[in-house]
Length: 197
Ligand code: GDP
Image (cartoon, rainbow, N blue to C red; front, side):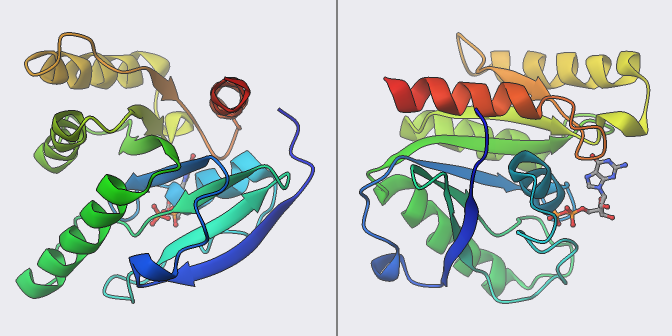
């Protein structure tokens, strides 16, 4: 898929104020600092589209971007701030989980996981919850340029093995880098394929 246009549409704190569910939508989510904003910018070819390195504790927003006048890319707030209070975390959970469960035009959630780390409970739990809810998702391993391919592949294998304890079939995954653009064409191609269905 060639990205002809990528425009910011709106930021929301309320599910009720999201754009009408008229176009297919793809959500990106992961721990804070996983590289989500960088990957969104790399995917769309627009450097400043998603704000990188947002401070923890900032307002939790659902950001909609319109791509090629054809589909929405949605930047969801990062989870897992060590500093976040219990109350903030509970609010994040309620808000995002409501969005994920209720959003009728949501085609797929891309769960971002740092390829440098061994599987983390918070990411695995989130995948498990998506599976339990029947929400389609794929896993995007980020920052591949930061270590050897062997190391990334080892961490990916461990993550997949952990998911296999819950799922009969583990969802598709991508190894990506916002720096080298590794994996970005594959993600856009998957989105294109779903949009054509
Ligand atoms: P977010 O909090 O998930 O949106 O993460 P950011 O996109 O702000 O990235 C967090 C940090 O990781 C920033 O310093 C980025 O420059 C860096 N980063 C993100 N993606 C990559 C990548 O693919 N390769 C490298 N080398 N650094 C990355």
